[in-house]
Length: 49
Image 1 (cartoon, rainbow, N blue to C red):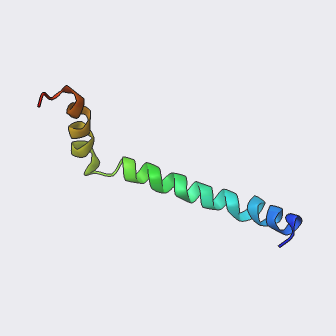
Image 2 (image 1 turned 135 degrees about the vertical axis):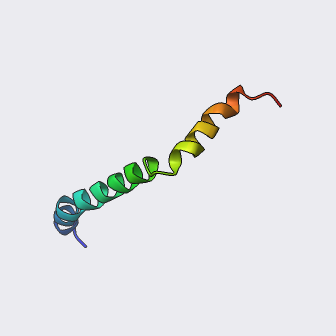
Image 3 (image 1 turned 30 degrees about the horizontal axis):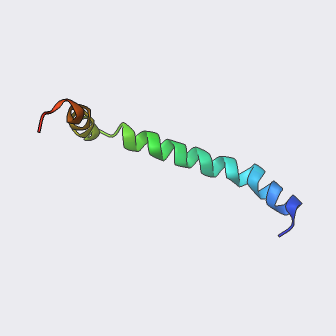
């Protein structure tokens, strides 16, 4: 695979791939069941052993 072919592939499908990954990460972070988990993680440093 030469540079120009790789560059053309990256220009066309690389952006699509990165957008899909970004949307998946944002959807995972804001899913309905995540709030309880994030609140628990936020309190970890405040709890005494």
